[in-house]
Length: 313
Image 1 (cartoon, rainbow, N blue to C red):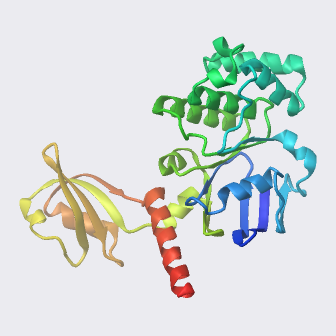
Image 2 (image 1 turned 180 degrees about the vertical axis):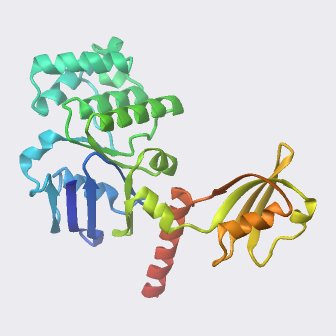
């Protein structure tokens, strides 16, 4: 079941079309990646889902009904542009934001103590927000985003500004939240994080949806018939770069063996390639090399930009 559906969303700002009939379908319990270059329309879509702004056309459904005002209490949103009241103390700020989400004071105190200890920021409870480092402020905002345990969590560039250790901690917490039943949407430029965390993705470029679906199917759709082979064998194998069956893209010595990246000609089976290689030596491993999300991102965006530029000319 989809916990969230956005259908044919259109949003215009003055002379700028931010979203042009964009649709997404977020399965319940998924970690969903919203991808796209800067200015693609991702943040605008997230702001519409959070009812900060309204679409000019289209509709958003939450839990199989039209999104309504009090759904904000079942959604947690961490915007890219962080915003805290600098002169408030950390504890006062956290309590204020928790109560805005409908939490009782006693419940908020109990949960805040747990998360402050977990993120090792409890000594800062009575410090002013302006005294916190950027990373500490981001930890605080993450805590107040998830504190009321909403069904849907939305993170806009959640890893921005975090060092690798704290980014890893945040990723672990996101995975734990999923295990506990939360659905998570996050927008990011970090394709490594997408492959590590996401089940589904949507790619937006120039205000329009280019790709949507399970990440495994997207990678399968863009497969390139390339395989990584670790090989022990005759040097004669390396004397040519092109045959009727495959092309050697890369050849790298690895601990007395050869790591080959080969591209198979259409119509040739992997069994035929393996048989051919076995006549020249020993195969240690033979694995298909699916394109990374970074490769797919670059390919799809560049192709679409070329099409759009040709039409405009």
